[in-house]
Amino acid sequence: MSDVGGADVTLNGMRVAWTFAKRWIPFCKRYKIKCRSPKAYFSAAEDENEDGNLGDTDFIQERQIVQKNYEVFQERVREYAKHDTGSSKRRDHSSVIEVIQESSRNHGLEENEAKDMPLLVYVSREKRPSHATHFKAGALNVLLRVSGVLSNSPFILGLDCDMYCNDPSSARQAMCFLLDPKLSPSLAFVQFPQKFHNVGKKDIYDSQLRSIFSVQWQGVDGLQGPGVCGSGYYLKRLSLYGRSLNDDHKDLMELRQSFGPSNEFVKSLLGNNKPDMKMAQLSETQQLASCTYEDGTKWGEEAGFLYATVAEDYFTGFASLHCKGWNSVYCDPKRAQFLGSGITNLNEYLVHVRRWTSGVVDIAFSKYSPLIYGISKLSFLQYMCYASPLISPICQFFSLWCLATIPQLCLLNGISLYPEVNIYDLYEEDPLKIYTFNT
Image (cartoon, rainbow, N blue to C red; front, top):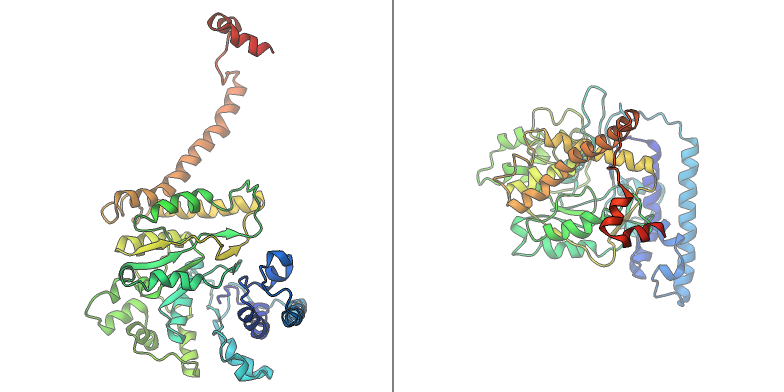
């Protein structure tokens, strides 16, 4: 879990969440509860939770106990937030790496209770005013390096902080593609659509992006697949390491020049490391999360998520994956696998559109512009799918500029925007028209 701000209240919240998760996750597994967000589960009506054990006395009793634990968890987080001095500096702080599972022993928790729990690691990368942060792409690359040393799992789930798991079978569905012997050699990631729990049928801001997820990506799935969408994807770790690992000859010096001086991370690239939670391993992660680690390397250029734009998902999917021969798959099951918070007011919509538009325009005027870079590397249809988002902001800006200036200029100069219509000329052409007009 990445915390860019390095806030103490977030770290404490993760510790408390780990304690509650020891109750919550076994409860969900035992009674096959699909929605894994306790807030969404307990706030929904009983008929919406799809619980098949509503008449079971044991289930009702345990549900009440878990709900009380959740209320205690919320109260502890709020209480800590009240006393938090806010001393952490969002743009100037050292890196903090903490394995929550290890630190839980200090709270008197039994070790055997957590033996089947997944590993929870808090990561806050180092930030200094004199060094560029590279926005979300920089945070993702830090997570990529730290997780490579601690677990080195072959697949990665990318999920934004405002989204939660609505169906635990998403990993199994993604692995059906990623482990398929026919698809796996060239398959980089499986993308799920973004859906939201707070957006109704009257989606006036199109937060669901129906034109993309329901139409465009259904078609592009028949080509090389959709692009990375920033959240809700299962990605093959190897695909983000660039061409350095695709060569048969893997020179250690070249790997260090590309991926940095960390010996443990280079071992993880070659598959020679043994992930563990020793102090030496954790101290190595401090170096991997430092703001100077990427200096002189290929991070953000050839390795990891690409920099130079805030639209790192679009840029990485295009230049680093699809243009290098990787494919992707769009998986859209009936039940939403992940749910998030969508845009519900005009201010949020304008901020979101401005961020996305500025990101794709940066790519449009760079050397990696799909208008010139992807012509020979992609099929014509795939190339058009990547080029269309770059052209649309420019065309929309021109049309909005015309609508914002031409009517006002015409009004000030007494120029009619519409042609004058003589009602008698209409009567001579068709009397029925004048009759309909008068009625």
